[in-house]
Image (cartoon, rainbow, N blue to C red; front, top):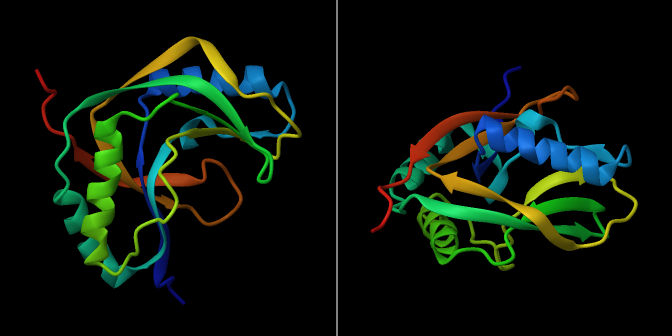
Length: 178
């Protein structure tokens, strides 16, 4: 029987150079502890959608096309750790306003497709490793600079093999500001 829904999310997807840098950072910081995120799965989630029925794809794609945001720079300069889910992450010390606006615009557009906006404040981050015993939050000595030119729609792939995610749609951001 064919699957009638797909587990999906909108995200920022780093280019290959940044993915490799993030993967090296994950390997260095987790040092064999926990489960490092597969290099092809590194991303920053914008909006998690969950299970999306096939007939709902057209609406969420239309919602994405309605987002207007400029190209922007995201500086990943912090490493953090969430003890309860045991997640090691990398992100900005403070998310740029353009990123916050991008997420808000996307959530607003998705309401027309039946998705409720996230109640928690947006926390921009890239998951580096899961099931990590413990880690200390800190600033990165060498921040990673990310020129964000697009956002994507991705889906979780069934099965346990990595990579776990697949990009199914890409939307470019507008021209950079002055």
